Length: 526
View 1: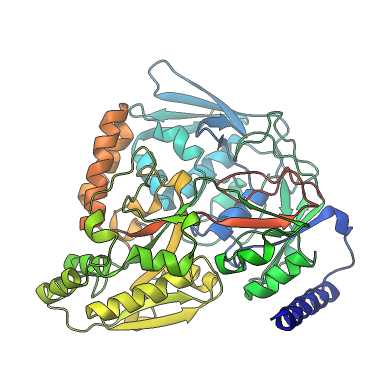
View 2: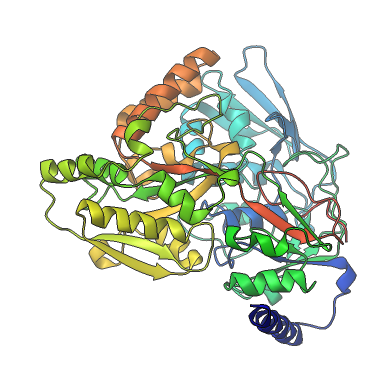
């Protein structure tokens, strides 16, 4: 075993040596943080996808109007705000010193265009825009939002943490239709994207934005001062997880965003490494069915698929160590204020007999279920395998479609039929910090083809989401959330697979690594 490990470590060292040889001249390594992220980055437009890799890329080069701190409180970031007594008019004022990476000043027109593009694609933004009467520039540094009625959704939406945060872009870029990817990646954030060194799926390089003026407050999640303490951050992709762990052990990389659970013993207790769960709230994993095509255009067959799968089986395959996981039927999260456990008697355990009865009642005709199966990312590779096996056991015909994770991300938006290259099921996970309400939780939009991948069409959920947005009373919101939970499970909008925490590991040469639900590289020193 030791000899095998040395061989693997040698392979990792060789891989990194080759990468270094192909890279540009040395960039002052003491001021470069090299990170192995969960997968390679290919999709650069943060409006086009909810994928975490693209979100993390967004936080590197873009900034947000507002931030969310560790107490879930909305804070000023690029802008501060005032509100009228009737809470229907908000005036946002950009702070001094904001520049795009090309040197141009950030203006209110840029922000308005960015809001509109984001809102056209985002589940929160789509509802928010129905509550807005108008958005208008006051001058170059101020803009006004006039609501039709008071709603907390305005500030919550502008400060959205994950699953498509609202990043600011120059107007000329933000004017790109939301369904069309942008081709220029200019932000105003703490890092600059180095386009000349980008190797899709393999390597991304960011340089410190020396013109960035951070806020004075201490950093707290996506709020506070974004102080960059290194010259460069390089993300390198290593599909072989053993190679990545070996490179971390050898000091060839500084940071590993997600350590596969079966490899944790290799990094725990190492003198030169720190192992930490940076997102203390953790994540929930689930599978999503395509409502547009057979067999899952039939509600009974969606219920059958949910009933067939054991959460415990999924979590054992994914995590293994019960220290890091728990079963949970709540779409909005066990432990979250809006979490509700409706359906746990058939969502958590496998109910094969129930699933088989539903297949018979629905008249299932053997239509194949095409399941997207990523091969290169530890946190989403096991789920489709377990789901596929459970569906076969229940009586579904299953076809596994293997590909890398970024290909899955690209495929998610494909609305073609499975026979024409589309899909029926994919699995992923979301952070609990943003899943505790019907808007931060991307899976709960149910407005058909404008919803997130899977495209459920459940008007009752959309009506309840709007009612939730208008409600000011917490008790009323909790009651509405319980109704949404019931509909989400009964209609097969999403199939919860349980909750878990993900450990990261990094060199003890790094300081200032922040606890947060998203991976942040400001405040890190080396």
